[in-house]
Length: 493
Image 1 (cartoon, rainbow, N blue to C red):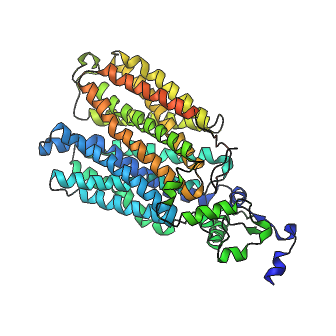
Image 2: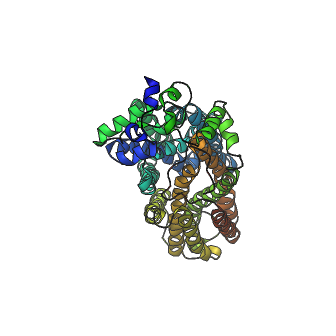
Protein backbone atom coordinates (compact mmCIF):
# COMPACT_ATOMS: atom_id res chain seq x y z
CA UNK A 1 0.00 0.00 0.00
CA UNK A 2 2.82 2.37 0.89
CA UNK A 3 4.58 1.56 -2.41
CA UNK A 4 1.41 2.41 -4.26
CA UNK A 5 1.22 5.74 -2.51
CA UNK A 6 4.79 6.50 -3.50
CA UNK A 7 3.86 6.02 -7.15
CA UNK A 8 1.08 8.61 -7.04
CA UNK A 9 1.41 11.56 -9.38
CA UNK A 10 3.10 14.63 -7.85
CA UNK A 11 0.07 16.80 -8.46
CA UNK A 12 -2.23 14.27 -6.84
CA UNK A 13 0.03 13.78 -3.81
CA UNK A 14 1.25 17.33 -3.26
CA UNK A 15 3.94 18.51 -0.85
CA UNK A 16 4.93 21.74 0.81
CA UNK A 17 7.91 23.06 2.72
CA UNK A 18 7.92 24.68 6.14
CA UNK A 19 8.48 28.12 4.61
CA UNK A 20 5.46 27.63 2.35
CA UNK A 21 3.41 26.59 5.37
CA UNK A 22 4.50 29.64 7.39
CA UNK A 23 3.73 31.93 4.45
CA UNK A 24 0.21 30.52 4.15
CA UNK A 25 -0.44 30.49 7.90
CA UNK A 26 0.76 34.10 8.11
CA UNK A 27 1.55 36.14 11.20
CA UNK A 28 -1.41 35.90 13.57
CA UNK A 29 -2.38 35.44 17.19
CA UNK A 30 -0.19 32.35 17.59
CA UNK A 31 2.98 34.22 16.62
CA UNK A 32 1.80 37.09 18.80
CA UNK A 33 1.90 34.76 21.82
CA UNK A 34 5.35 33.51 20.78
CA UNK A 35 6.45 37.14 20.45
CA UNK A 36 5.17 37.94 23.95
CA UNK A 37 7.06 35.04 25.54
CA UNK A 38 10.32 35.59 23.64
CA UNK A 39 10.03 39.32 24.21
CA UNK A 40 9.66 38.74 27.95
CA UNK A 41 13.01 36.95 27.83
CA UNK A 42 14.66 40.00 26.27
CA UNK A 43 12.80 42.34 28.61
CA UNK A 44 14.25 40.42 31.57
CA UNK A 45 17.77 40.49 30.10
CA UNK A 46 17.62 44.24 29.48
CA UNK A 47 16.56 44.85 33.08
CA UNK A 48 19.44 42.79 34.45
CA UNK A 49 21.92 44.65 32.23
CA UNK A 50 20.61 48.11 33.09
CA UNK A 51 20.72 47.32 36.79
CA UNK A 52 24.53 47.48 36.56
CA UNK A 53 24.24 51.26 36.23
CA UNK A 54 22.55 51.57 39.63
CA UNK A 55 23.80 49.03 42.15
CA UNK A 56 27.55 49.59 41.79
CA UNK A 57 27.71 52.92 43.60
CA UNK A 58 25.30 51.77 46.33
CA UNK A 59 27.25 48.58 47.05
CA UNK A 60 30.53 50.48 46.94
CA UNK A 61 29.26 52.90 49.56
CA UNK A 62 27.78 50.20 51.82
CA UNK A 63 30.76 47.84 51.77
CA UNK A 64 33.58 50.34 51.19
CA UNK A 65 34.69 48.85 47.87
CA UNK A 66 37.55 50.11 45.73
CA UNK A 67 36.86 51.37 42.17
CA UNK A 68 38.27 48.14 40.72
CA UNK A 69 35.98 46.06 42.93
CA UNK A 70 33.01 48.12 41.81
CA UNK A 71 33.98 47.63 38.16
CA UNK A 72 34.27 43.87 38.70
CA UNK A 73 30.52 43.71 39.46
CA UNK A 74 29.93 44.78 35.86
CA UNK A 75 32.77 42.83 34.28
CA UNK A 76 31.74 39.54 35.86
CA UNK A 77 28.24 39.80 34.37
CA UNK A 78 29.61 40.27 30.86
CA UNK A 79 32.10 37.45 31.42
CA UNK A 80 29.23 35.19 32.46
CA UNK A 81 27.25 36.23 29.39
CA UNK A 82 30.23 35.42 27.18
CA UNK A 83 30.31 31.84 28.46
CA UNK A 84 26.54 31.51 28.59
CA UNK A 85 25.94 32.71 25.03
CA UNK A 86 28.13 29.91 23.71
CA UNK A 87 26.76 27.24 26.08
CA UNK A 88 23.04 27.92 25.62
CA UNK A 89 23.45 28.09 21.84
CA UNK A 90 24.92 24.58 21.82
CA UNK A 91 22.14 23.25 24.05
CA UNK A 92 19.47 24.89 21.90
CA UNK A 93 20.82 23.51 18.61
CA UNK A 94 21.37 20.01 19.95
CA UNK A 95 18.50 19.50 22.42
CA UNK A 96 15.82 21.99 21.38
CA UNK A 97 14.99 25.67 21.69
CA UNK A 98 12.65 25.07 24.64
CA UNK A 99 15.31 23.34 26.71
CA UNK A 100 17.68 26.17 25.87
CA UNK A 101 15.52 28.99 27.18
CA UNK A 102 14.22 26.91 30.11
CA UNK A 103 17.81 26.50 31.31
CA UNK A 104 18.55 30.21 30.92
CA UNK A 105 15.42 31.19 32.86
CA UNK A 106 16.22 28.80 35.72
CA UNK A 107 19.79 30.07 36.10
CA UNK A 108 19.01 33.78 35.65
CA UNK A 109 15.99 33.86 37.97
CA UNK A 110 17.57 31.69 40.66
CA UNK A 111 20.91 33.49 40.74
CA UNK A 112 19.23 36.89 40.46
CA UNK A 113 17.04 36.23 43.49
CA UNK A 114 19.91 34.72 45.50
CA UNK A 115 22.06 37.79 44.84
CA UNK A 116 19.50 39.77 46.84
CA UNK A 117 20.67 38.01 50.00
CA UNK A 118 24.42 38.24 49.36
CA UNK A 119 26.12 38.61 52.75
CA UNK A 120 29.41 39.89 51.35
CA UNK A 121 31.15 41.12 48.22
CA UNK A 122 32.46 37.72 47.08
CA UNK A 123 29.04 36.08 47.17
CA UNK A 124 27.56 39.01 45.22
CA UNK A 125 30.24 38.70 42.53
CA UNK A 126 29.58 34.95 42.22
CA UNK A 127 25.80 35.24 42.00
CA UNK A 128 25.93 38.14 39.53
CA UNK A 129 28.35 36.13 37.41
CA UNK A 130 25.80 33.30 37.38
CA UNK A 131 23.11 35.81 36.40
CA UNK A 132 25.29 36.82 33.47
CA UNK A 133 25.72 33.16 32.55
CA UNK A 134 21.94 32.78 32.42
CA UNK A 135 21.47 36.02 30.49
CA UNK A 136 23.77 34.65 27.80
CA UNK A 137 20.75 32.73 26.48
CA UNK A 138 19.19 35.82 24.94
CA UNK A 139 20.03 34.72 21.35
CA UNK A 140 18.02 31.53 21.93
CA UNK A 141 14.83 33.58 22.34
CA UNK A 142 15.69 35.52 19.19
CA UNK A 143 16.34 32.39 17.10
CA UNK A 144 13.21 30.69 18.46
CA UNK A 145 10.90 33.58 17.55
CA UNK A 146 12.57 34.05 14.16
CA UNK A 147 11.70 30.48 13.18
CA UNK A 148 7.95 31.15 13.53
CA UNK A 149 7.89 34.28 11.31
CA UNK A 150 7.17 34.22 7.54
CA UNK A 151 10.04 35.54 5.41
CA UNK A 152 7.96 38.29 3.78
CA UNK A 153 7.67 40.50 6.88
CA UNK A 154 10.41 39.05 9.07
CA UNK A 155 12.41 42.28 9.30
CA UNK A 156 9.50 44.33 10.64
CA UNK A 157 8.53 41.76 13.27
CA UNK A 158 12.11 41.30 14.42
CA UNK A 159 12.36 45.04 14.98
CA UNK A 160 9.15 44.89 16.99
CA UNK A 161 10.69 42.06 18.98
CA UNK A 162 13.69 44.29 19.73
CA UNK A 163 11.43 46.88 21.35
CA UNK A 164 11.16 44.58 24.36
CA UNK A 165 14.83 45.29 25.10
CA UNK A 166 14.25 49.03 24.96
CA UNK A 167 11.17 48.90 27.17
CA UNK A 168 13.06 46.66 29.60
CA UNK A 169 15.81 49.30 29.83
CA UNK A 170 13.30 52.11 30.34
CA UNK A 171 11.36 50.07 32.92
CA UNK A 172 14.52 49.28 34.90
CA UNK A 173 15.53 52.95 34.95
CA UNK A 174 12.04 53.84 36.18
CA UNK A 175 12.11 51.07 38.79
CA UNK A 176 15.49 52.21 40.08
CA UNK A 177 14.25 55.79 40.22
CA UNK A 178 11.39 54.65 42.47
CA UNK A 179 13.11 51.97 44.56
CA UNK A 180 16.66 53.16 45.23
CA UNK A 181 15.91 56.48 47.00
CA UNK A 182 13.26 54.80 49.21
CA UNK A 183 14.55 51.26 49.84
CA UNK A 184 17.95 49.84 48.82
CA UNK A 185 19.83 47.89 46.13
CA UNK A 186 18.67 44.51 47.49
CA UNK A 187 15.06 45.37 46.77
CA UNK A 188 16.01 46.44 43.26
CA UNK A 189 17.75 43.11 42.64
CA UNK A 190 14.76 41.17 43.92
CA UNK A 191 12.18 43.05 41.88
CA UNK A 192 14.35 42.89 38.76
CA UNK A 193 14.35 39.07 38.89
CA UNK A 194 10.53 38.86 38.63
CA UNK A 195 10.39 38.73 34.78
CA UNK A 196 12.75 35.74 34.77
CA UNK A 197 10.47 33.91 37.20
CA UNK A 198 7.53 34.75 34.92
CA UNK A 199 9.34 32.93 32.10
CA UNK A 200 9.42 29.79 34.25
CA UNK A 201 5.73 30.04 35.10
CA UNK A 202 4.75 30.39 31.43
CA UNK A 203 7.19 27.80 30.10
CA UNK A 204 4.52 25.11 29.73
CA UNK A 205 2.68 27.01 26.99
CA UNK A 206 5.78 27.72 24.87
CA UNK A 207 5.89 25.45 21.77
CA UNK A 208 9.01 23.97 20.24
CA UNK A 209 10.22 25.49 16.98
CA UNK A 210 8.71 23.59 14.03
CA UNK A 211 11.82 24.38 12.00
CA UNK A 212 14.02 22.74 14.63
CA UNK A 213 11.69 19.73 14.69
CA UNK A 214 11.85 19.39 10.91
CA UNK A 215 15.62 19.67 11.01
CA UNK A 216 15.67 16.78 13.49
CA UNK A 217 13.33 14.72 11.29
CA UNK A 218 10.36 15.02 13.67
CA UNK A 219 7.94 16.01 10.93
CA UNK A 220 4.84 14.75 12.70
CA UNK A 221 5.60 16.89 15.77
CA UNK A 222 6.23 19.91 13.56
CA UNK A 223 2.95 19.29 11.73
CA UNK A 224 1.01 19.23 15.02
CA UNK A 225 2.40 22.67 15.91
CA UNK A 226 1.58 24.00 12.44
CA UNK A 227 -1.97 22.69 12.77
CA UNK A 228 -2.29 24.43 16.12
CA UNK A 229 -1.04 27.63 14.47
CA UNK A 230 -3.73 27.37 11.78
CA UNK A 231 -6.37 26.81 14.45
CA UNK A 232 -5.36 29.86 16.45
CA UNK A 233 -4.78 32.07 13.38
CA UNK A 234 -7.92 30.74 11.66
CA UNK A 235 -6.03 29.91 8.48
CA UNK A 236 -5.10 26.66 6.76
CA UNK A 237 -2.05 24.74 5.60
CA UNK A 238 -1.20 24.12 1.94
CA UNK A 239 -2.61 20.86 0.49
CA UNK A 240 -0.41 17.77 0.63
CA UNK A 241 2.23 16.66 3.09
CA UNK A 242 4.91 18.56 4.97
CA UNK A 243 8.38 17.87 3.55
CA UNK A 244 10.85 17.31 6.35
CA UNK A 245 14.43 18.36 6.00
CA UNK A 246 15.48 14.91 7.07
CA UNK A 247 14.68 11.46 5.71
CA UNK A 248 16.05 9.12 8.31
CA UNK A 249 14.25 6.43 10.22
CA UNK A 250 10.49 6.64 10.50
CA UNK A 251 10.18 9.96 8.72
CA UNK A 252 12.21 8.61 5.82
CA UNK A 253 9.68 5.84 5.38
CA UNK A 254 6.78 8.31 5.40
CA UNK A 255 8.25 10.74 2.87
CA UNK A 256 7.86 9.78 -0.79
CA UNK A 257 11.11 9.87 -2.77
CA UNK A 258 9.45 12.04 -5.43
CA UNK A 259 9.31 15.01 -3.02
CA UNK A 260 12.74 14.66 -1.43
CA UNK A 261 14.91 17.76 -1.76
CA UNK A 262 18.17 17.42 -3.74
CA UNK A 263 19.87 19.13 -0.77
CA UNK A 264 18.89 16.36 1.63
CA UNK A 265 22.21 14.46 1.38
CA UNK A 266 24.05 17.57 2.57
CA UNK A 267 21.49 18.18 5.30
CA UNK A 268 21.66 14.54 6.41
CA UNK A 269 25.41 14.94 6.84
CA UNK A 270 24.91 18.12 8.88
CA UNK A 271 22.32 16.49 11.12
CA UNK A 272 24.43 13.44 11.77
CA UNK A 273 27.26 15.77 12.78
CA UNK A 274 24.95 17.67 15.12
CA UNK A 275 24.57 14.55 17.23
CA UNK A 276 27.95 15.28 18.77
CA UNK A 277 27.82 18.03 21.34
CA UNK A 278 30.35 20.42 19.81
CA UNK A 279 29.78 19.73 16.12
CA UNK A 280 27.53 22.76 15.68
CA UNK A 281 30.38 24.95 16.92
CA UNK A 282 32.91 23.43 14.54
CA UNK A 283 30.46 23.80 11.65
CA UNK A 284 30.77 27.58 12.09
CA UNK A 285 34.31 27.24 10.71
CA UNK A 286 33.40 25.21 7.64
CA UNK A 287 34.53 26.60 4.30
CA UNK A 288 31.08 28.08 3.62
CA UNK A 289 30.60 29.74 7.01
CA UNK A 290 34.02 30.78 8.28
CA UNK A 291 34.01 34.18 6.54
CA UNK A 292 30.52 34.94 7.84
CA UNK A 293 31.46 33.77 11.35
CA UNK A 294 34.60 35.90 11.63
CA UNK A 295 32.93 38.99 10.18
CA UNK A 296 30.04 38.61 12.63
CA UNK A 297 32.48 38.44 15.52
CA UNK A 298 34.04 41.74 14.50
CA UNK A 299 30.60 43.28 13.93
CA UNK A 300 29.29 42.22 17.33
CA UNK A 301 32.44 43.43 19.07
CA UNK A 302 31.99 46.83 17.43
CA UNK A 303 28.26 46.86 18.21
CA UNK A 304 28.64 46.06 21.91
CA UNK A 305 31.68 48.30 22.32
CA UNK A 306 29.87 51.29 20.83
CA UNK A 307 26.44 50.61 22.41
CA UNK A 308 27.57 50.06 26.01
CA UNK A 309 30.38 52.59 25.66
CA UNK A 310 27.96 55.33 24.59
CA UNK A 311 25.76 54.53 27.60
CA UNK A 312 28.76 54.93 29.90
CA UNK A 313 29.93 58.06 28.11
CA UNK A 314 26.49 59.57 28.64
CA UNK A 315 26.68 59.14 32.41
CA UNK A 316 30.25 60.43 32.53
CA UNK A 317 30.11 63.41 30.18
CA UNK A 318 26.58 64.74 30.55
CA UNK A 319 26.64 64.56 34.35
CA UNK A 320 30.25 65.58 34.84
CA UNK A 321 31.22 62.49 36.84
CA UNK A 322 34.71 62.52 35.36
CA UNK A 323 35.73 65.42 37.58
CA UNK A 324 37.69 66.95 34.68
CA UNK A 325 35.11 68.99 32.83
CA UNK A 326 33.48 71.21 35.38
CA UNK A 327 32.43 73.67 32.67
CA UNK A 328 30.25 71.01 31.12
CA UNK A 329 27.87 71.22 34.05
CA UNK A 330 25.26 73.81 33.23
CA UNK A 331 22.17 72.02 34.50
CA UNK A 332 22.56 73.39 38.00
CA UNK A 333 23.34 71.42 41.13
CA UNK A 334 23.09 67.68 40.74
CA UNK A 335 20.96 65.85 43.26
CA UNK A 336 20.80 62.23 44.35
CA UNK A 337 18.29 61.21 41.68
CA UNK A 338 20.27 62.65 38.73
CA UNK A 339 21.65 59.25 37.74
CA UNK A 340 18.16 57.75 37.45
CA UNK A 341 16.80 60.75 35.55
CA UNK A 342 19.74 60.69 33.11
CA UNK A 343 19.44 56.94 32.58
CA UNK A 344 15.71 57.22 31.97
CA UNK A 345 16.00 60.08 29.49
CA UNK A 346 18.87 58.56 27.51
CA UNK A 347 17.11 55.19 27.38
CA UNK A 348 14.36 56.94 25.43
CA UNK A 349 16.92 57.42 22.62
CA UNK A 350 16.46 53.76 21.75
CA UNK A 351 12.86 54.31 20.63
CA UNK A 352 13.76 56.48 17.60
CA UNK A 353 16.63 54.04 16.97
CA UNK A 354 14.15 51.19 16.69
CA UNK A 355 11.92 53.30 14.45
CA UNK A 356 14.87 54.12 12.18
CA UNK A 357 15.85 50.45 11.89
CA UNK A 358 12.21 49.48 11.20
CA UNK A 359 12.05 52.02 8.35
CA UNK A 360 15.35 50.93 6.78
CA UNK A 361 15.63 47.18 7.29
CA UNK A 362 13.11 45.93 4.71
CA UNK A 363 13.60 48.86 2.34
CA UNK A 364 17.36 49.08 1.89
CA UNK A 365 18.36 45.74 3.40
CA UNK A 366 20.28 44.60 6.46
CA UNK A 367 23.80 45.49 5.30
CA UNK A 368 23.06 49.01 4.07
CA UNK A 369 20.93 49.76 7.15
CA UNK A 370 23.77 48.92 9.53
CA UNK A 371 26.39 50.75 7.48
CA UNK A 372 24.24 53.89 7.25
CA UNK A 373 23.48 53.99 11.00
CA UNK A 374 27.14 53.43 11.91
CA UNK A 375 28.08 56.38 9.68
CA UNK A 376 25.43 58.58 11.35
CA UNK A 377 26.73 57.53 14.80
CA UNK A 378 30.22 58.53 13.63
CA UNK A 379 28.90 61.99 12.70
CA UNK A 380 27.24 62.41 16.11
CA UNK A 381 30.40 61.46 18.03
CA UNK A 382 32.81 63.52 15.93
CA UNK A 383 32.13 66.89 17.71
CA UNK A 384 32.93 65.25 21.06
CA UNK A 385 36.62 65.21 20.12
CA UNK A 386 36.54 68.61 21.82
CA UNK A 387 34.71 69.78 24.90
CA UNK A 388 31.09 70.77 24.31
CA UNK A 389 28.32 72.28 26.40
CA UNK A 390 26.14 70.01 28.53
CA UNK A 391 23.09 70.38 26.30
CA UNK A 392 25.00 69.70 23.06
CA UNK A 393 26.91 66.79 24.65
CA UNK A 394 23.69 65.13 25.77
CA UNK A 395 22.04 65.68 22.37
CA UNK A 396 25.04 64.23 20.51
CA UNK A 397 25.17 61.18 22.77
CA UNK A 398 21.39 60.81 22.45
CA UNK A 399 21.76 60.63 18.65
CA UNK A 400 24.73 58.27 18.86
CA UNK A 401 22.83 55.91 21.16
CA UNK A 402 19.84 56.03 18.81
CA UNK A 403 22.04 54.79 15.95
CA UNK A 404 23.88 52.28 18.13
CA UNK A 405 20.56 50.74 19.13
CA UNK A 406 19.50 50.66 15.49
CA UNK A 407 22.62 48.80 14.34
CA UNK A 408 22.39 46.46 17.32
CA UNK A 409 18.80 45.61 16.38
CA UNK A 410 19.56 44.94 12.72
CA UNK A 411 22.63 42.85 13.60
CA UNK A 412 20.52 40.66 15.92
CA UNK A 413 18.09 40.07 13.03
CA UNK A 414 20.78 39.58 10.37
CA UNK A 415 22.81 37.00 12.31
CA UNK A 416 20.27 34.16 12.69
CA UNK A 417 19.16 34.76 9.10
CA UNK A 418 22.71 34.09 7.89
CA UNK A 419 23.10 30.74 9.65
CA UNK A 420 21.31 27.48 8.72
CA UNK A 421 18.98 25.82 11.21
CA UNK A 422 21.47 23.20 12.57
CA UNK A 423 23.82 25.94 13.81
CA UNK A 424 21.53 28.99 14.05
CA UNK A 425 21.39 29.36 17.83
CA UNK A 426 25.05 28.35 18.25
CA UNK A 427 26.22 30.86 15.62
CA UNK A 428 24.14 33.68 17.09
CA UNK A 429 25.21 32.74 20.61
CA UNK A 430 28.92 32.64 19.85
CA UNK A 431 28.73 35.94 17.95
CA UNK A 432 26.96 37.48 20.93
CA UNK A 433 29.64 36.04 23.21
CA UNK A 434 32.35 37.73 21.17
CA UNK A 435 30.37 40.95 21.44
CA UNK A 436 30.45 40.65 25.22
CA UNK A 437 34.22 41.05 25.02
CA UNK A 438 33.50 44.51 23.67
CA UNK A 439 31.20 45.03 26.65
CA UNK A 440 34.04 44.06 28.99
CA UNK A 441 36.61 46.27 27.26
CA UNK A 442 34.53 49.42 26.70
CA UNK A 443 34.44 50.49 30.39
CA UNK A 444 38.23 50.79 30.26
CA UNK A 445 37.82 53.32 27.44
CA UNK A 446 34.58 55.08 28.30
CA UNK A 447 35.21 55.19 32.03
CA UNK A 448 38.97 54.89 32.38
CA UNK A 449 40.10 57.43 29.79
CA UNK A 450 37.34 59.95 30.50
CA UNK A 451 37.90 59.70 34.25
CA UNK A 452 41.60 60.40 33.63
CA UNK A 453 40.68 63.46 31.53
CA UNK A 454 41.42 61.89 28.13
CA UNK A 455 38.08 62.52 26.44
CA UNK A 456 39.59 63.03 22.98
CA UNK A 457 41.49 59.74 23.10
CA UNK A 458 38.34 57.89 24.20
CA UNK A 459 36.25 59.37 21.39
CA UNK A 460 38.96 58.61 18.80
CA UNK A 461 38.87 54.94 19.80
CA UNK A 462 35.07 54.90 19.39
CA UNK A 463 35.37 56.47 15.95
CA UNK A 464 37.95 53.90 14.85
CA UNK A 465 35.71 51.06 16.03
CA UNK A 466 32.80 52.51 14.05
CA UNK A 467 34.90 52.72 10.88
CA UNK A 468 36.10 49.12 11.25
CA UNK A 469 32.49 48.01 11.76
CA UNK A 470 31.41 49.66 8.51
CA UNK A 471 34.26 47.99 6.59
CA UNK A 472 33.26 44.66 8.12
CA UNK A 473 29.63 45.11 7.01
CA UNK A 474 30.68 45.83 3.42
CA UNK A 475 32.59 42.52 3.34
CA UNK A 476 29.56 40.38 4.18
CA UNK A 477 28.78 38.24 1.11
CA UNK A 478 25.01 37.93 1.60
CA UNK A 479 21.99 40.16 1.93
CA UNK A 480 19.13 38.29 3.61
CA UNK A 481 16.25 40.69 2.94
CA UNK A 482 13.27 38.65 1.73
CA UNK A 483 15.19 35.36 1.72
CA UNK A 484 13.82 32.20 3.30
CA UNK A 485 15.70 30.79 6.27
CA UNK A 486 18.14 28.08 5.25
CA UNK A 487 18.13 24.55 6.61
CA UNK A 488 21.43 23.76 4.89
CA UNK A 489 24.83 25.39 4.66
CA UNK A 490 24.46 28.83 3.05
CA UNK A 491 25.44 28.83 -0.58
CA UNK A 492 27.10 31.50 -2.63
CA UNK A 493 24.01 32.70 -4.45
